[in-house]
Length: 281
Image (cartoon, rainbow, N blue to C red):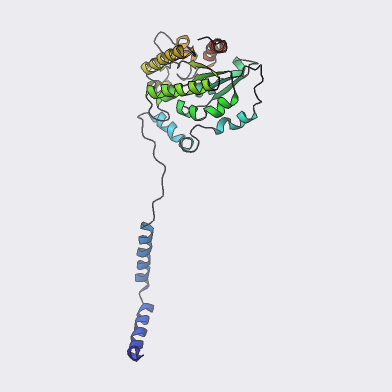
Protein backbone atom coordinates (compact mmCIF):
# COMPACT_ATOMS: atom_id res chain seq x y z
CA UNK A 1 0.00 0.00 0.00
CA UNK A 2 2.96 2.40 0.77
CA UNK A 3 4.03 2.40 -2.85
CA UNK A 4 0.71 3.90 -3.98
CA UNK A 5 0.61 6.68 -1.40
CA UNK A 6 -0.78 10.20 -1.61
CA UNK A 7 1.83 11.37 -4.16
CA UNK A 8 0.80 8.69 -6.64
CA UNK A 9 -2.83 9.64 -6.21
CA UNK A 10 -2.10 13.32 -6.92
CA UNK A 11 -0.22 12.39 -10.10
CA UNK A 12 -3.20 10.34 -11.36
CA UNK A 13 -5.54 13.26 -10.73
CA UNK A 14 -3.31 15.63 -12.72
CA UNK A 15 -3.20 13.17 -15.65
CA UNK A 16 -6.97 12.87 -15.64
CA UNK A 17 -7.28 16.63 -15.62
CA UNK A 18 -4.99 16.92 -18.62
CA UNK A 19 -7.20 14.44 -20.58
CA UNK A 20 -10.31 16.39 -19.70
CA UNK A 21 -8.93 19.69 -20.96
CA UNK A 22 -7.44 18.30 -24.22
CA UNK A 23 -7.96 20.65 -27.16
CA UNK A 24 -11.17 19.56 -29.01
CA UNK A 25 -9.48 20.13 -32.37
CA UNK A 26 -6.62 17.81 -31.42
CA UNK A 27 -9.06 15.15 -30.25
CA UNK A 28 -11.12 15.34 -33.47
CA UNK A 29 -8.02 15.08 -35.63
CA UNK A 30 -6.84 12.01 -33.72
CA UNK A 31 -10.25 10.41 -34.17
CA UNK A 32 -10.27 11.04 -37.93
CA UNK A 33 -6.78 9.60 -38.30
CA UNK A 34 -7.81 6.52 -36.36
CA UNK A 35 -10.94 6.02 -38.50
CA UNK A 36 -8.96 6.49 -41.71
CA UNK A 37 -6.52 3.84 -40.56
CA UNK A 38 -9.36 1.39 -39.91
CA UNK A 39 -11.03 2.09 -43.28
CA UNK A 40 -7.74 1.67 -45.11
CA UNK A 41 -7.45 -1.84 -43.75
CA UNK A 42 -10.85 -2.88 -45.18
CA UNK A 43 -10.83 -4.80 -48.50
CA UNK A 44 -11.84 -2.69 -51.49
CA UNK A 45 -15.27 -3.51 -52.96
CA UNK A 46 -15.19 -5.65 -56.08
CA UNK A 47 -16.11 -3.70 -59.20
CA UNK A 48 -17.43 -5.29 -62.42
CA UNK A 49 -14.67 -6.00 -64.89
CA UNK A 50 -14.57 -3.74 -67.91
CA UNK A 51 -15.34 -5.22 -71.31
CA UNK A 52 -12.08 -5.44 -73.28
CA UNK A 53 -12.31 -2.99 -76.19
CA UNK A 54 -12.72 -4.59 -79.61
CA UNK A 55 -12.01 -1.52 -81.70
CA UNK A 56 -15.65 -1.38 -82.79
CA UNK A 57 -17.77 1.11 -80.85
CA UNK A 58 -21.16 -0.44 -81.51
CA UNK A 59 -19.96 -3.91 -80.56
CA UNK A 60 -18.38 -2.60 -77.35
CA UNK A 61 -21.61 -0.87 -76.35
CA UNK A 62 -23.63 -3.97 -77.13
CA UNK A 63 -21.32 -6.24 -75.12
CA UNK A 64 -21.38 -3.81 -72.18
CA UNK A 65 -25.19 -3.82 -72.24
CA UNK A 66 -25.15 -7.61 -71.83
CA UNK A 67 -22.84 -7.88 -68.82
CA UNK A 68 -25.66 -9.13 -66.59
CA UNK A 69 -26.42 -11.90 -69.09
CA UNK A 70 -22.80 -12.95 -69.35
CA UNK A 71 -22.40 -13.14 -65.57
CA UNK A 72 -25.84 -14.29 -64.37
CA UNK A 73 -27.39 -16.42 -67.15
CA UNK A 74 -24.83 -16.98 -69.87
CA UNK A 75 -26.99 -19.36 -71.88
CA UNK A 76 -30.13 -17.28 -71.27
CA UNK A 77 -32.04 -20.30 -70.04
CA UNK A 78 -34.63 -17.99 -68.57
CA UNK A 79 -35.80 -16.88 -72.02
CA UNK A 80 -37.65 -20.10 -72.91
CA UNK A 81 -37.86 -21.90 -69.56
CA UNK A 82 -41.58 -21.33 -69.05
CA UNK A 83 -42.46 -21.87 -72.71
CA UNK A 84 -40.59 -25.18 -72.73
CA UNK A 85 -42.38 -26.34 -69.58
CA UNK A 86 -45.76 -25.43 -71.08
CA UNK A 87 -45.27 -27.47 -74.25
CA UNK A 88 -47.40 -30.58 -74.47
CA UNK A 89 -45.55 -33.90 -74.86
CA UNK A 90 -44.73 -34.78 -78.44
CA UNK A 91 -47.54 -36.78 -80.06
CA UNK A 92 -46.47 -40.06 -81.73
CA UNK A 93 -47.34 -38.70 -85.18
CA UNK A 94 -46.07 -35.17 -84.57
CA UNK A 95 -43.07 -34.03 -86.59
CA UNK A 96 -41.84 -31.45 -84.13
CA UNK A 97 -38.98 -29.32 -85.45
CA UNK A 98 -36.80 -27.02 -83.34
CA UNK A 99 -35.04 -24.04 -84.92
CA UNK A 100 -32.14 -22.90 -82.74
CA UNK A 101 -29.97 -19.90 -83.46
CA UNK A 102 -29.35 -16.22 -82.92
CA UNK A 103 -31.33 -13.12 -83.92
CA UNK A 104 -31.74 -14.30 -87.52
CA UNK A 105 -33.82 -17.17 -86.13
CA UNK A 106 -35.28 -15.16 -83.25
CA UNK A 107 -36.77 -12.57 -85.62
CA UNK A 108 -38.18 -15.21 -87.98
CA UNK A 109 -41.94 -15.50 -87.42
CA UNK A 110 -42.16 -19.20 -88.22
CA UNK A 111 -45.93 -19.33 -87.92
CA UNK A 112 -46.19 -16.93 -90.88
CA UNK A 113 -43.94 -19.00 -93.13
CA UNK A 114 -44.85 -22.51 -91.96
CA UNK A 115 -48.55 -22.24 -91.02
CA UNK A 116 -49.98 -25.20 -89.17
CA UNK A 117 -46.55 -26.83 -88.72
CA UNK A 118 -45.26 -27.85 -85.27
CA UNK A 119 -42.13 -25.76 -85.73
CA UNK A 120 -40.67 -24.26 -82.55
CA UNK A 121 -38.50 -21.17 -82.57
CA UNK A 122 -35.67 -21.20 -80.04
CA UNK A 123 -33.58 -18.39 -81.44
CA UNK A 124 -32.14 -15.75 -79.11
CA UNK A 125 -30.88 -12.37 -80.22
CA UNK A 126 -27.12 -11.95 -79.93
CA UNK A 127 -26.24 -15.53 -79.06
CA UNK A 128 -23.16 -17.49 -80.01
CA UNK A 129 -22.65 -21.25 -80.27
CA UNK A 130 -21.27 -21.71 -76.72
CA UNK A 131 -24.41 -20.09 -75.34
CA UNK A 132 -26.58 -22.42 -77.41
CA UNK A 133 -24.71 -25.40 -76.00
CA UNK A 134 -25.50 -24.22 -72.46
CA UNK A 135 -29.23 -24.34 -73.18
CA UNK A 136 -29.14 -27.29 -75.56
CA UNK A 137 -30.71 -29.74 -73.14
CA UNK A 138 -33.52 -27.45 -72.06
CA UNK A 139 -34.36 -25.97 -75.47
CA UNK A 140 -33.67 -28.96 -77.72
CA UNK A 141 -33.22 -32.38 -76.12
CA UNK A 142 -36.04 -32.07 -73.59
CA UNK A 143 -38.47 -30.97 -76.34
CA UNK A 144 -37.99 -34.29 -78.21
CA UNK A 145 -38.00 -32.92 -81.76
CA UNK A 146 -37.68 -35.12 -84.81
CA UNK A 147 -35.36 -32.59 -86.46
CA UNK A 148 -33.10 -29.79 -85.22
CA UNK A 149 -32.24 -26.93 -87.58
CA UNK A 150 -29.20 -24.92 -86.49
CA UNK A 151 -28.42 -21.48 -87.92
CA UNK A 152 -25.54 -19.98 -85.95
CA UNK A 153 -21.95 -18.82 -86.00
CA UNK A 154 -22.18 -15.26 -87.33
CA UNK A 155 -21.99 -13.75 -83.83
CA UNK A 156 -19.08 -16.02 -82.95
CA UNK A 157 -17.14 -14.62 -85.89
CA UNK A 158 -18.08 -11.08 -84.83
CA UNK A 159 -16.77 -11.74 -81.30
CA UNK A 160 -20.02 -10.94 -79.52
CA UNK A 161 -19.07 -13.12 -76.52
CA UNK A 162 -15.36 -12.69 -77.09
CA UNK A 163 -12.89 -13.69 -79.79
CA UNK A 164 -13.53 -17.13 -81.28
CA UNK A 165 -11.48 -19.05 -83.82
CA UNK A 166 -13.25 -21.06 -86.51
CA UNK A 167 -11.91 -24.23 -84.91
CA UNK A 168 -13.74 -23.39 -81.69
CA UNK A 169 -16.99 -22.73 -83.54
CA UNK A 170 -16.61 -26.03 -85.38
CA UNK A 171 -16.09 -27.83 -82.08
CA UNK A 172 -19.37 -26.40 -80.77
CA UNK A 173 -21.20 -27.52 -83.90
CA UNK A 174 -19.70 -30.98 -83.42
CA UNK A 175 -20.91 -31.11 -79.81
CA UNK A 176 -24.44 -30.18 -80.88
CA UNK A 177 -24.46 -32.88 -83.55
CA UNK A 178 -23.18 -35.53 -81.16
CA UNK A 179 -25.71 -34.63 -78.48
CA UNK A 180 -28.53 -34.70 -81.03
CA UNK A 181 -27.45 -38.06 -82.41
CA UNK A 182 -27.34 -39.53 -78.91
CA UNK A 183 -30.99 -38.52 -78.48
CA UNK A 184 -32.13 -39.67 -81.93
CA UNK A 185 -32.65 -36.18 -83.32
CA UNK A 186 -31.98 -35.56 -87.01
CA UNK A 187 -29.80 -32.52 -87.65
CA UNK A 188 -29.79 -29.82 -90.31
CA UNK A 189 -26.84 -27.44 -90.26
CA UNK A 190 -27.56 -24.23 -92.18
CA UNK A 191 -24.83 -22.20 -93.78
CA UNK A 192 -23.97 -18.81 -92.39
CA UNK A 193 -25.62 -16.02 -94.33
CA UNK A 194 -23.65 -13.40 -96.25
CA UNK A 195 -23.77 -9.81 -95.01
CA UNK A 196 -23.55 -6.46 -96.78
CA UNK A 197 -22.27 -2.93 -96.21
CA UNK A 198 -24.52 -1.06 -98.60
CA UNK A 199 -25.88 1.22 -95.85
CA UNK A 200 -24.09 3.27 -93.23
CA UNK A 201 -25.55 1.28 -90.33
CA UNK A 202 -24.34 -1.97 -91.90
CA UNK A 203 -20.67 -1.05 -92.21
CA UNK A 204 -19.46 -2.11 -88.75
CA UNK A 205 -21.49 -5.31 -88.75
CA UNK A 206 -20.04 -6.18 -92.15
CA UNK A 207 -16.46 -5.45 -91.03
CA UNK A 208 -16.89 -7.75 -88.03
CA UNK A 209 -17.78 -10.69 -90.28
CA UNK A 210 -15.00 -11.21 -92.84
CA UNK A 211 -16.29 -12.99 -95.92
CA UNK A 212 -13.36 -15.42 -95.96
CA UNK A 213 -14.23 -16.67 -92.47
CA UNK A 214 -17.88 -17.15 -93.40
CA UNK A 215 -16.89 -19.09 -96.52
CA UNK A 216 -14.40 -21.21 -94.59
CA UNK A 217 -16.96 -22.12 -91.93
CA UNK A 218 -19.57 -22.92 -94.56
CA UNK A 219 -17.10 -25.19 -96.34
CA UNK A 220 -16.41 -26.99 -93.07
CA UNK A 221 -20.14 -27.35 -92.32
CA UNK A 222 -20.85 -28.83 -95.74
CA UNK A 223 -17.98 -31.29 -95.41
CA UNK A 224 -18.95 -32.26 -91.84
CA UNK A 225 -22.54 -32.91 -92.86
CA UNK A 226 -21.43 -35.05 -95.79
CA UNK A 227 -19.13 -37.15 -93.62
CA UNK A 228 -21.59 -37.58 -90.75
CA UNK A 229 -24.93 -38.14 -92.45
CA UNK A 230 -26.39 -34.72 -91.67
CA UNK A 231 -28.21 -32.32 -93.98
CA UNK A 232 -26.44 -29.17 -95.11
CA UNK A 233 -28.78 -26.27 -95.84
CA UNK A 234 -27.22 -23.75 -98.22
CA UNK A 235 -28.85 -20.40 -97.55
CA UNK A 236 -25.72 -18.53 -98.60
CA UNK A 237 -25.94 -19.24 -102.33
CA UNK A 238 -29.60 -18.25 -102.44
CA UNK A 239 -29.05 -14.85 -100.79
CA UNK A 240 -25.69 -13.68 -102.13
CA UNK A 241 -25.25 -11.11 -104.90
CA UNK A 242 -22.60 -10.80 -107.62
CA UNK A 243 -20.32 -8.93 -105.18
CA UNK A 244 -20.35 -11.82 -102.73
CA UNK A 245 -22.55 -9.86 -100.31
CA UNK A 246 -26.07 -10.24 -98.98
CA UNK A 247 -28.47 -8.89 -101.56
CA UNK A 248 -29.46 -5.33 -100.72
CA UNK A 249 -33.14 -5.99 -101.37
CA UNK A 250 -33.16 -8.88 -98.88
CA UNK A 251 -31.80 -7.02 -95.83
CA UNK A 252 -32.24 -3.53 -94.48
CA UNK A 253 -29.42 -3.61 -91.92
CA UNK A 254 -26.94 -5.79 -93.80
CA UNK A 255 -27.24 -8.76 -91.45
CA UNK A 256 -30.84 -9.80 -90.83
CA UNK A 257 -33.12 -10.94 -93.66
CA UNK A 258 -36.24 -8.91 -94.23
CA UNK A 259 -39.57 -10.48 -95.20
CA UNK A 260 -38.33 -11.04 -98.76
CA UNK A 261 -35.22 -12.78 -97.43
CA UNK A 262 -37.16 -15.09 -95.13
CA UNK A 263 -39.50 -15.87 -98.03
CA UNK A 264 -36.53 -17.28 -99.96
CA UNK A 265 -35.22 -19.17 -96.92
CA UNK A 266 -38.49 -20.87 -95.94
CA UNK A 267 -38.82 -23.37 -98.82
CA UNK A 268 -35.12 -24.20 -98.55
CA UNK A 269 -35.59 -24.98 -94.86
CA UNK A 270 -38.69 -27.06 -95.62
CA UNK A 271 -36.79 -29.11 -98.20
CA UNK A 272 -33.86 -29.69 -95.82
CA UNK A 273 -36.22 -30.79 -93.03
CA UNK A 274 -37.89 -33.27 -95.37
CA UNK A 275 -34.47 -34.65 -96.34
CA UNK A 276 -33.53 -35.06 -92.71
CA UNK A 277 -36.81 -36.81 -91.91
CA UNK A 278 -36.21 -39.20 -94.81
CA UNK A 279 -32.68 -39.89 -93.65
CA UNK A 280 -31.15 -38.28 -96.73
CA UNK A 281 -28.08 -36.05 -96.87
